[in-house]
Structure formats: C-alpha cells, structure tokens
Length: 198
View 1 (tube, helix red, strand yellow):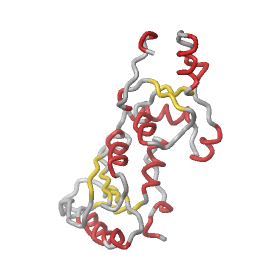
View 2 (cartoon, one colour; view 1 turned 60 degrees about the horizontal axis):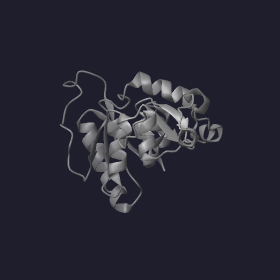
View 3 (cartoon, rainbow, N blue to C red; view 1 turned 135 degrees about the vertical axis):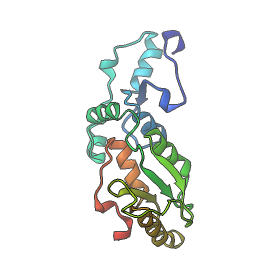
View 4 (cartoon, rainbow, N blue to C red; view 1 turned 30 degrees about the vertical axis):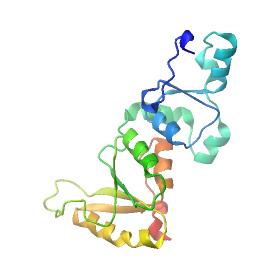
C-alpha cells in the first residue's frame, strides 16, 4: 500500500478514505464518518494488493442498501452532511454518561469526533445554576447516556434537577441515540429516545 502512495492511518480522524465491507456502527467507522471521508468497499484494498496499481476510487464506492434501510440513512447524504458539519455536529452539546455504561471511551471518542463535550455523571452537580433571566438565550438540551440498572435510575432525578437549575433541557437517553445521531450526521431529536418514557 505504501508503495502505491497510500498511507494507512490508525487515527480515524486523520483518514481521507475509509474502507469497509459494509456500513457498521463501530467506534472507528463513526469517528471517521465525522470527517466526511470517501468510503470505499474493502475490495478496493484487495484490488490494490492484487494488481499493484491504484484502481479508480469511483468504481469501488461503498454501496450497502440493506444497511442503509436498517439505519434509515443514505450514505451519500450522510457524507455530504458530515462535510458540511466539519466535525461540529455536536458543538456545544454536553453529553454525560452514567458510570455503568460499558466502554465509555467508545462514546467519548464519537462525541469528541463530532465536536461535543463528554463527561461521566455520578450524581454531583456539574452545571452551574443559572436562572432563565440570567441566561441570554433559549434553554439548550443536555444529554445523559444511560442504561436501566437501578443504580442508573437513581441518578435520573438528580440529572434532571441539575439540568433545570442550569436552565437546560434534560434528555435521558440510551446510547442508541448517540449512535443514530453520529450515523446520520444530524442532531435529530424525538421524544421516542427518552428512556424515562418507558
């Protein structure tokens, strides 16, 4: 690959091209997606090593209709939005997670790849108290990624109180919300994501 002028990088935020067999919601895929890369089928790499030549990228663009249906996206549109977002999809969007969330580093890297801020929430106030009069704009949302373990449920009322004291809108959601947002490259919202509605 190096002989052909292709630099293979391990940091997904530094890639210009992403090779994958199909659309996946893995950490590396979603982080790389935030940069708006050209996404090729992994057969592109096979062709490079087999022929020792660079084939036309256009002939190997990833097509995955089945996964597009499953995730409710069109890859072409997602990449266009990612380029427009310039890694700022979640800019100024605070996202917290409960300590019970498995592998929080995965979600932190996805949030930060998209320009958001990420922290663990253990029940202590982390947002400055502010009145609506002191705030110079409308209330913005703040998110808590959580599961439904009893210890996590105990944190929900404290999180809601902290958010409201900071003139913010508390949204308590499963990690699926973040994965959907990162995959679509749209900061979309629906109350169906609220885990507290169950």
